[in-house]
Length: 394
Image (cartoon, rainbow, N blue to C red; front, side):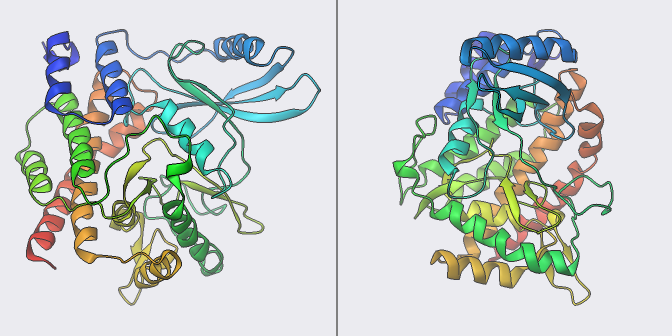
């Protein structure tokens, strides 16, 4: 019997002690393990979701009416449903319910996502997020509700590839979106998080490596919880990351998945309408976001061999505009360090968590996660390349 599929209380507590991380991240990971031996995922009928929404709004907004509930496409990590909410005064608006599946390819905490989206409103365009069910009292599992935002993640007719992977944009869209893309990331990193209501987040100390070690613990714990077989490169990389952790000189909001596919834009005006997918956001080093956005899989090389970041903007221009806009120095050594860390995380997601979700029957996205598992060894090859470059200082 696979002991990880039926974890004991003692094993869970040992993991928590061995890999201390942020309080709410620990809550999410522990909740996942405590429920792991439960039943497999069964899609909820739309009628059940509608009933849960009606009960929730009878409490949260008496007199409101729910209609047009429907599953919403996309979302590798969360179930999503769109619905129309009619307020007591008759005002109608579309909303989105995001709910945890029994296990997710990235296990996160809905209160963190909710607080971060509310905090960032007015700094960058984000969906309005009025309600959260952090403990799953109303929706059986943790969930949040946000306003539906119009827009697309890629140009119409651009193909059916997974959004964000090797995305291409026309020269006209590159010109219109590239600068916005950099400026949005800059505004996220310049945000005054210390004045925001973010009590679900631990606040790392500037000038210390403690926050970096918390992130390493977070992901190494996930590997221990979800992996099926040992992989020496994963263990070696964790040790390397600990030994080479740089201090966080300036603590910022790290989006953690800032890339093409995670923002919406109006295809007519080419204006960004919303930055999405805040579930992995945390406080840390801005180089972590820069390195994530610079990943090869999210962009491509043009005919001159220049890397086009997320299919939008040439790498040198991206980094130069970011530095000029923020006034923050861009340290190539830290980008190299976080390139190792981010590729290591990606390998953990596709080679451990995604596979376990599928085999355990706990995911709503079995086909997508099985497909992503094929990228696992590409991640490992890329990880080895990043390690070699970082160790050689190149």
